[in-house]
Image 1 (tube, rainbow, N blue to C red):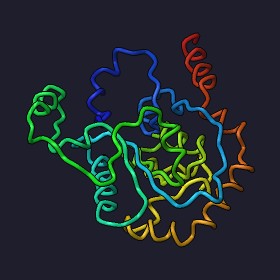
Image 2: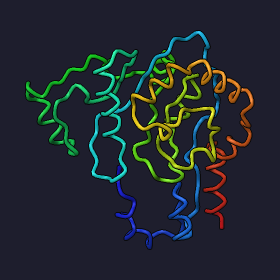
Image 3: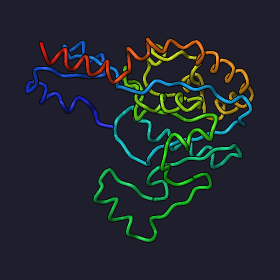
Image 4: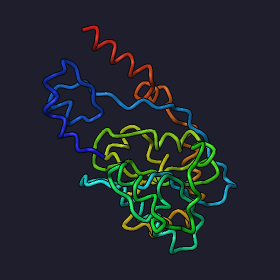
Length: 239
């Protein structure tokens, strides 16, 4: 995660700037867009047992609202509990990591830089086939508190019939029906969230499947399709 303010000194070199950040768009007159994504939501199988998954790399950041440490909190919680949870991603088998690729490669040569987790299942070769095995997916953006920062993470879940446990853009409800995800902000702990899901799974799934059936896909396509993004770029470029 990089603080966008470090790029301010470069703004003057461009006549047109595109951003997903409404604050920057308002302040500097940039053209705002939504990060393009595929929209093809799938229902959840009602007989699929409750299970949890998380796909993320083990990273560090000094950004105030980073979510890398929160992903580690999720992993550590399930390591101490007996719930069905697996996680995938790069560098979780490393005891020490750095923000420098050079130092990471160097320390990885040392035999003591090994770490093991009960629930770690290595690196996912195909994200869709991996997450579709599970019912719920922890879906945290790299940072939270950034309006408009909605990436592929929640759509990867929705497109594969997996209910997202989402934390990231504060305005997510502006675009995605609240019945299509479990809002991490509604809970005071990971434990309370997991217990709620287990106790109310049938209700969550019923609401989710109804929301999938009633979803306004045309409206979502207008917001997030590649064509919408390209039209924006070319229209601004022609002016």
